[in-house]
Length: 442
Ligand code: HEM
Image 1 (cartoon, rainbow, N blue to C red):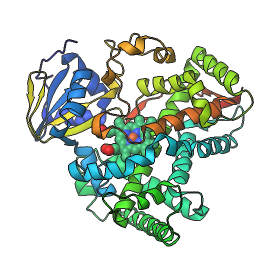
Image 2: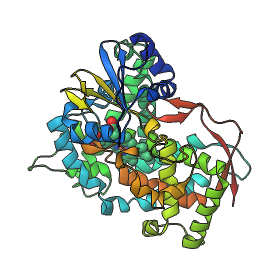
Image 3: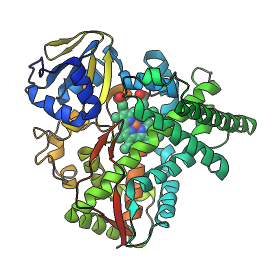
């Protein structure tokens, strides 16, 4: 595979580059891509490099991963999330990852499938045929309910879980601001927003502390992730309550918005592609008939799983990942000095016609035919790669497939408008202002 190296990139002043990244990040990425597989742009106080080739992505995320730490956005998120799996580095990260990984093994998460189907059915009870719903809000409420139950368990009373959900969504709303150049300053000013944030954070900490104390008192027998975090041991030592809180918050944040966005785009893409929608319905009818799906059905639903993969390709919820280099890194003959920022963009890699024929077409079939064996592994990275690959990938894939199967068995959606939704690339790739759709019964 030829890798094209032609840095430096376009003539953009550092401030203009930063402004373009904040205001129209996808357009900036698309403007940079034609300059080559390694593109350098200057941003204030650093060089930034876009790596846009599967081999270079492998080099940075896998081969030479030690040369990198998480990028500036995730580092800013430490203020909210503390030191957790998502934000920590090196030895602390390894330890946390080793302790938490077993919670995401297939057998463990298979136990959550029923909760996923139950919450999908409950969400559908709110819809009326021919009515109008914001599918993004619906999918968000649904994945929030799923992660709420799997993380905190069914024994959590409704009032308390509502407090957690409200506080988490509001506090995590702060994340939309982390791209602001003034973020570090904003969070230190006692503005009404920050006072509200601190109040909610205190509520959240209180509720999580109560739940931790109750679980410790009752012998930690539950199968919810909070009980598992409290039971986790490495060399005989477990996590302090503070660490458990940070990890629980992180799993809640990382686990709900991304999956909700993936499902939102899946319904929209199916509505725009009647051929694929028909094939999905045919598979569900043949395999499930009149009954709800169970985890045992997943191997027999290859088209349903391909629909999810194709949606993750066309609309990757995590559209870019950033890294800060801490040691020199060689990217195909080019030297990236320590202190640089590296950007890897699923948005570009997933739409690159070198790896994807008809890249903008929604064709779940491409996940079923021999075509997929010829594609470079790192041309598709919705969950990242290497030691920092998404720990929740099996959970998210199962959740998305179970929810698509249980809803599409009964419902279909039409877009309420013929306009393409505008994309809002914040941390995740959202439809700006939500996505109105009209449900009908099949
Ligand atoms: C479709 C849904 C999801 C997508 C697209 C997604 C995407 C990603 C990506 C791209 C990364 C790597 C970021 C980087 O390297 O900079 C990541 C990391 C992570 N994700 Fe996910 N994720 C999803 C669902 C979930 C779920 C359901 C959970 C947990 C329940 C989760 C928990 C995490 C955690 C804890 C990390 C950090 C892992 C580490 O650094 O060791 N994610 N995710």
